[in-house]
Image (cartoon, rainbow over all chains, first blue to last red; front, side):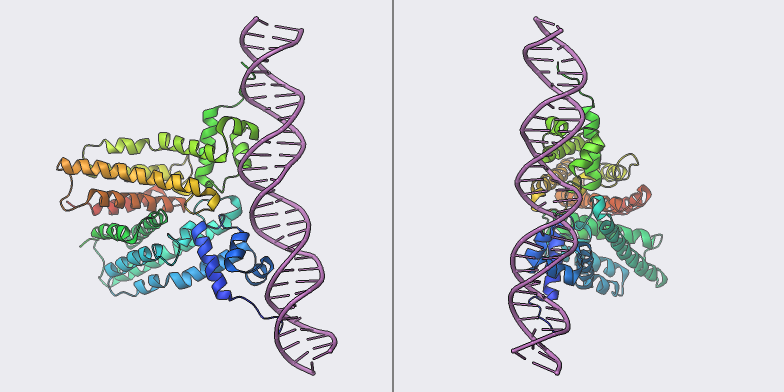
Length: 193
Length: 193
DNA sequence: GGAATTTTATACCGATAAGTACAAAATCGG
DNA sequence: CCGATTTTGTACTTATCGGTATAAAATTCC
């Protein structure tokens, strides 16, 4: 019933996600969004709420669609392979040709005005959650005797996440996948034998 | 001659630097700047040019004052100590209590609108210059027989910079110095013996 | 005590930001 | 064909953005 929608909600959200990913939350204007998504302002507000809600929906999509590799990586049987797949999976995503460089979870709002403080908080919380999930996976590895002696799972998880965040900055600066892979190979050499 | 200035140019620039550092280029408004610096808008334009020029002056100050540790680190006799001092020096700066968390060179404009593209370019170039300086120092180490065999100086420099950029994201997210030091200790374990 | 000079304060500019009111357009069930 | 419903297009609102015109205030030289 009613006039039929003239755009695809999923496509529009995908475009919004890519815009926020490339330009950050504050760097993306409603005009950028409506022009990119091919919809009018009232449609945007009607279907996605305000700018902040749209960003959170875009972030949710990012976690659902782009972060699949992370959940898959956690299922690897060996902790060392988990780490490698997490690092390379992030590098792949950060340098994929079909999407913006870097990481939405960092590009979105690393430093910002008070107006975006809530978004910034959500992104920090998101990164914390990812790090925590990796730490829990490593704790499981400890139980399974699949973890280097004298090494803290939480510390190693933070180290891995720090490297991925570093590669996110590198990717946002134009580094290509091969360069990130070399970094990752070096990062993994510190894995205690 | 003329009416005497009622503010200290150096103090004002310091404040501007800290504001940009904490809120990024686009997240810092002229009102933030004038209120923080304690000067009026015409004074800001008269002494520092427009917002973009002010940012570049603040960035210059950052490189002169905050990055002293980097130039000192390069003078260490052993490459491995250079790397350690670079990593720890960055971590110290990113978590100093008297200044914003993270790094101006990254917080300033990692992702932004087209309006800030020039600033973004300058920051990317700055990071590239730092990485290049470190790579050159490592190349010198190769000449001096002070570098692990089969290890590329440029690759290792990029690895070290990637870790510092990762710690910058961690610091901007609230990580404390002790946490970053643990990360750095792990990062340095990959240094080939 | 002026004249010249520099900094200050006030008040403004056009452009753009996010967000909305409202009616025309396009569908549905009857 | 007609009312009910939903989406669209246009035009608007208020607030803030970066930037500036202008004149008063405070100094030095003469």
